[in-house]
Amino acid sequence: MSTSQIAFLKGHGTENDFVIVPDPDNALDLPASAVARLCDRRAGVGGDGLLHVVRSAAHPEAAAMAGEAEWFMDYRNSDGSVAEMCGNGVRVFARHLRRAGLVGDGDLAVATRGGVKKVHLAKNGDVTVHMGVAALPDDGVTVTVGGRSWPARNVNMGNPHAVAFVEDLAHAGDLRAEPPYAPAGVYPDGVNVEFVVARGTRHVAMRVHERGSGETRSCGTGACAVAVAAARRDGIDPAVTGAPVTYTVDLPGGTLVITERPDGAVEMTGPAVIVAEGFFDAEWIASALDPRRG
Image (cartoon, rainbow, N blue to C red; front, side, top):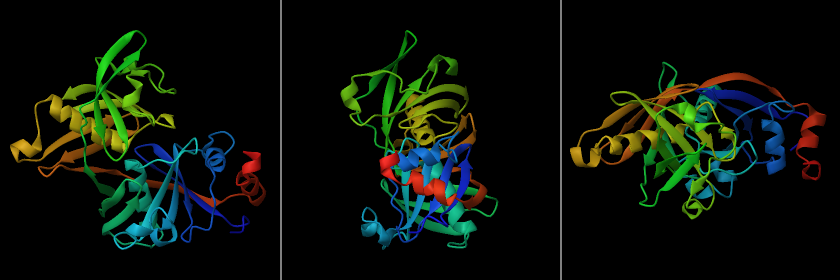
């Protein structure tokens, strides 16, 4: 692909922000070094991650899902590493497809490394994502920050989470670096760590360290993991009660509403906003895409 006219957009979901790179035919090679430069907040566009928008049939990791979902969210963390899923990213990804006229209001499917996600675009601007079923492995960890330690619930939403309930969100300290946890072998590929406080009945607030990105203003899969962990802590399991349970989750960047259904399906509803669009400078993007200059 020529580097003279490579388009990008900037969007966010509850202030979890992304560089969006439309590339339907998967013609653009995006090495980790290039993604990191694009996501750099001082020398690039800036974002918590990058949404590479590709037709499923054109991407080797998504071709098998092309029959279910036309579009693949090739998601990258801000350090350039590959991630399985990003809940806020899926909402922004869907908002971009709608804005570009590639899909209409209503239901669509998005392929991700965490599987095919069903999405509903409401006319009021909210986007609901069917996030799949949470896995709750028995092995958890102990998270330690500043001399305080907490047990953390192991929740997998297609990507790994460690959910710790704390007395004060300030106890999470500086979340730019991954909080120490043990035993390390529970998460061999790293983990997203959530710190959670109660705000009321079925209402919690959280901060999060996202693997590969540091502290972010919001994390959709993290909010889902937190809601499921909070329900279990509160003695609620929809598979047992036969009734769905909904939690409101406050994040630094806004609020998400998470519902877990009796069949285990988790749904996340929240806003998604496209902020700007344009073209990369040809000389700059050519330099960014050259791994020898990474």
